[in-house]
Image 1: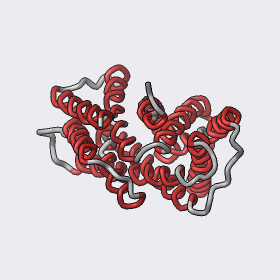
Image 2: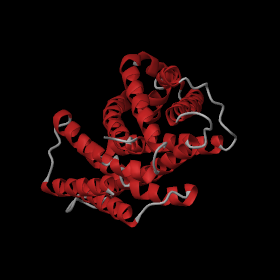
Image 3: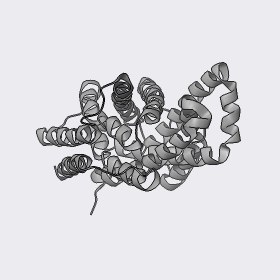
Image 4: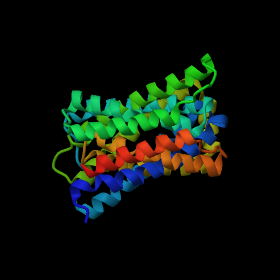
Length: 299
């Protein structure tokens, strides 16, 4: 039976499933909306759902709406702004490379999250957990490599973009964890839900102002595509809700390493939706990811 302390495991798996679905939806909207338009839909259309989630949580827990302490806000801004940059860079990389390969590069964030979590939050990891993170990360790198491919700028650019995006996602995870654990006097579920509302509000505000100033036609296009955008926004808020619940219970590195199961989900989406087959090399990398994730959960 799962204890509260181990609930981060199913929370993370559910979040990973939701994120793969959201990424696929955003990818299909990048063409008509552009990179930042497709990025904004996860925040603009996700924000109302986050309020709904918080209302349900408050009704279920009996908690009152918390007003976070001053220390909450720097962590929130780190998480929110880093995620904006990371999401935009992710969509740029997805335009240049396959869905699976881009997802694989992004998952190198796990080892970066371990470093940032230790530096900024003092999150402690045992040597066995570090080994598990390294094994899973090696599996991701093997999955992402393309031996024998032409080493042109066209190949290097999406690789660099994907890896830098992973760094910003790692900073985002650490920032949001810092925000969630700094909300006092409520259950961890309420703290996570409250952080999600404030985070999506900041992200929606920043990107909407940017688009109003630089590309107002994109906002009109977003409203014109409100049906697919609404679904992508819901999936984004749904995935983020479970990410935040997991981050409330354990270190960002643990969450982001277990989230490497997303590579398996992305492979399935890629095969059935985008007709991108899996090679023997990718299969070997996936085996290493499974070993690393299994070790992480076991220890």
